[in-house]
Length: 607
Ligand code: AGP
Image (cartoon, rainbow, N blue to C red):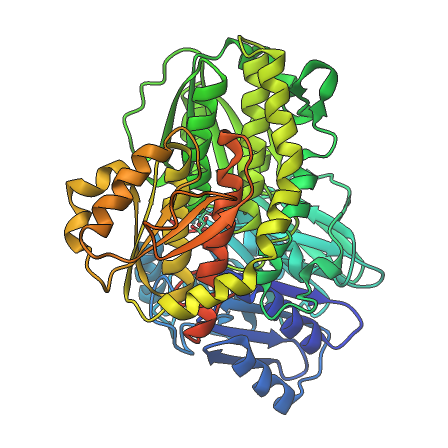
């Protein structure tokens, strides 16, 4: 949620740190701060967007080539300057930034205050600066290790000390920290997006490790001071993937990247000769997968809706029994995992705290735990037994778009792999494969209608409430369409299974409460038509997403958005695009901050 950047090298730290914060701003952004070491260390903080901090830094123009910076997403204490990071110890020697939550901060704070430490903020994070101060006896690395040994909870931290002007200490447990090693300079960040401009040599820190970086060098130890030997990894994402190009917003760029993201998800993963998927990441567990009887999919938000879609797909293509569960609920259930249960964790960021906790619980109970993750090297990717990457590229917009359709594509491939090992025929497998290969062009045809969808947004965006309905494969799309409208346009939207509507929400329908009906001509079409009739009878306005060339809906609804025809199972990969575009255009028309919606963060690393 929060973001960390650290730099030690030969260049002025200010530009690199501020630029890094701007790249991390999508993770959380209610306040920010920066500290740079010099004869007189520089510290400044600002409430609001990074631009507010940037103005101060440019005005002050601090010297120094070692520093740390932070964007905060408030948990403990409001977004104020004292609560913003870096936090400083009582001596003014130590500066520290923190992501995560220190669960035992209250008893620690009480003890430290009794020992004479003075606190300036309401945060849990500040205890860390004082713990390092207390433990410091000339060796910063040892002080950080000793301080963190007392802490319960999660952290990713960066620490600098005036007496160690050429080094930065970093540590992680539960909150990511990546080191970037360049020539005569080193960086660290909570997210590779802040490093990609500077180096392609990165090192992922593991939980309970402490790293020391200096210009062009790094070393790692455990919390117990055992040395860790690890080389650098080549970063495969180039800096250009963080640019918006000619698009006004990252979200729109990412919506338009979906055909390519699906192509990337499919690349090298289809075996035409056998009508099956090839997923290298699952080879090591293939035998266990073939013996599986039950699948539980755990995830949050949009990734949860992808999982819900996956349930229908696995049920159609395999004989597995499938459950989907919100990770935040799953982690606290009394789990009675039956034999041969596979748990699949889906996450774009690979860092979502609830999903991570859920998969750890499932592992503890002996389940085979798989991951479907976009961010390479993320915690979920590393902690699952095996898994598949989306390869959707960096997703910057807080609202997930291309990662959703990538996840759906890979869920189909996974179901195809399992199904073909059971009773799914070659012909059925090939009809899915042919459909999948057609999806990118089908998506391009929908994206070409963006202007038409903007006109619909103009027509409807004055409404305050919307209903989204769909059945079976389209039900998760109704939920996702409603989520998109809520999170970026701040419009109230209910996603409902179309058949459930008459059990309550139909009471809301009136001429000011429009419905988005997802009604492709599939096996549920006739049933959805009945639901549309019920809305019409109550004078509700309806926009229908339906199959190209549909001749029956025109007289029943106010507006139609056409999507190409494809295999019934794959149509949701298409029907979600108009809903993403509708939400996007509504948000722009309403003057909302599309890429950084209020109160939200891209990567939800707290519970
Ligand atoms: C959706 O647009 C949001 N970004 C949010 O619901 C997100 O899907 C959720 O927080 C899960 O994130 P993850 O995929 O990174 O685990």
